[in-house]
Image 1 (cartoon, rainbow, N blue to C red):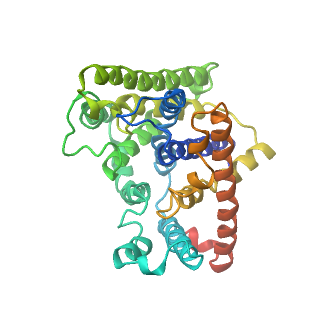
Image 2: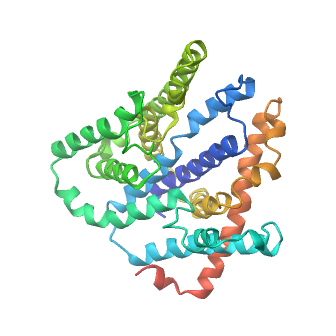
Length: 357
């Protein structure tokens, strides 16, 4: 792994920990509902969510950065597909054998969700990501030849259509899936490719303070996400209106989430990690990040692990933050061990050359 890439691999780890945090808060029942009066942990949970919601966009931007300059490899797409199938079917089979899922509850639709996870959107992220990955090589040559000014103007119009409109309109447009679709991922790919082709030059990239400036932009954007929720929430309590608009800035395609994503991505672009043990360790841990997602977000697991960890029990206690930190590390670490075993198994079944075609 090249020296400059270790920073992105560190970001990949951070992004997955942030994604686990989002699931910890949502599926753990920590986030307050509209009808409930938020307790102290509820406001804290909203703050954590504001800091972590850019994670999915960041993960896509990392992929776009590398795909924009890489050759198309069918083996890579096959590898991802096989890995998804392995977990979607394998985890379900284990749970059935363990008695967690009664065999009588399995119908054809549930089985199809296991066997065809991409087309059935078992993991919505995987479905959107795979479509983006397949379209990427079809766009790269054209994007490289596209004049910078034209490229920038096109992105500006797409930002208005896909992000700004979703952020400010009190109604939801028919094309707006709040960033949970391939259209938004394709837009993020265009952003990532633009940063790769026309981003800050290497001399500017090395300027002192570039990382601090980018991190400042990320925290300011996250603060605006949080502030928007509080403002609309107060308005909702007084008028009963705009209830559906309260979490609008927390959606992946909101303008503040987009800006936070780009700033966080660029901050880690400016991190220099020397080659050595630390960089190698970061790259090994990051290589399991996709497997971590597939395991903890499996259809039959996603609502169980917060119960196993007792998330709700610590929601409004002084130990909330400690429990959150320990929990996300346990989830990442445990899933990483499983995925390492999976990777070793795949290495025995298929030759490495198969993945590099």
